[in-house]
Length: 442
Ligand SMILES: *[C@@H]1O[C@H](CO)[C@@H](O)[C@H](O)[C@H]1NC(C)=O
Ligand SMILES: *[C@@H]1O[C@H](CO)[C@@H](O)[C@H](O)[C@H]1NC(C)=O
Ligand SMILES: *[C@@H]1O[C@H](CO)[C@@H](O)[C@H](O)[C@H]1NC(C)=O
Image (cartoon, rainbow, N blue to C red; front, side, top):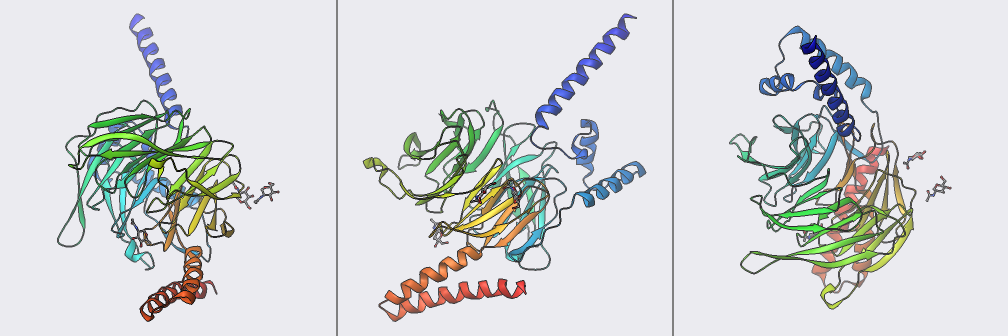
């Protein structure tokens, strides 16, 4: 009798633990069926890679593909350049490489995929796949030299570095670094990043912690953001700043300082963006960090001039405040050249000009799941969004229009032929890009 009682009790406890952990991990994202199977099964699947030989798994696969079809979200729009398909689970993060050649995406399907940006406008889209053994990545970020990427591991709750080695035939092999970073965070992660200078890595969790690491995985500094919680945090594209937002109505920006020889010195407060009247969902930098955009629960988004001498106590200037109807989850992206802003809320995206603040484009029901994020490519040509299994790639027509308007204004004031020629070339390029989109429309 007694052994049975013990067995029953331990089964009950086991089931309880499983239920609790499922409730915790599954609260934000529903995992696909293949990820909720027991770990032995997972191990064999990972080591076997793609070949699932027996009939049982074939049947499983069939069911899965039927389910996938059901879940596939249909979306068309004149500004849609293409849809990148390949992931078999929801995409949680993506990143463009700074050489402009690649887009990395990661999903619950245990893979990171590297897409070639060159063929966005082609019919077929090549992507190569890196497997995340026994785990999956929730965040991905390219190294500045575009030859490695870092991932945040969902189960292990730390950073793993992958090297990308280009083979003679142009494809890649991926090698994980021998050791993952030490586990330090005590709450779920909100974002990771690598400075473009190559000097540090950042990770931020949903408590008030941001960690600054060196590239080898030693912690250089711990920041307490004091914002009740962290909703979002990022490294500025110039690699100088780290910033965060959360429950309080401000964005806090720090500078990560190094001495001339390259050694880490300190993290200092740089400036704050103050003016919203409620918590901030998300914010973004332009590529030179001279502009920032914020979107808040107060129902507005703001554009800021952050090209200031903060060491002389100069504060960022608020350029304008615009109303927007947003609710959680809400994200904002600023194009690298700061000419266009995109805001996602739920399933929808709006695109705005930063010259007037006006909404110029609206994209409704873009994904089958709520939009998890948005990004512009480094050449300001495309806006990408993700949330379900697909990546939507849109033409950045708002950016093209802004270039034409701005360059036409400058052309009138140009004083030399060389200047006029250069401006005219920029106008022609943007115009032909716009025309290509418009002819596709009809
Ligand atoms: C930022 O983007 C602009 C326009 O796309 C480009 O000319 C400039 O070199 C970029 N600057 C940095 C710091 O990357
Ligand atoms: C926001 O939503 C309200 C009601 O839902 C509507 O009256 C208002 O026009 C919307 N504002 C914008 C800027 O879309
Ligand atoms: C998305 O757009 C639809 C159609 O305008 C609207 O009904 C819905 O409320 C919007 N959702 C969000 C979260 O803005």
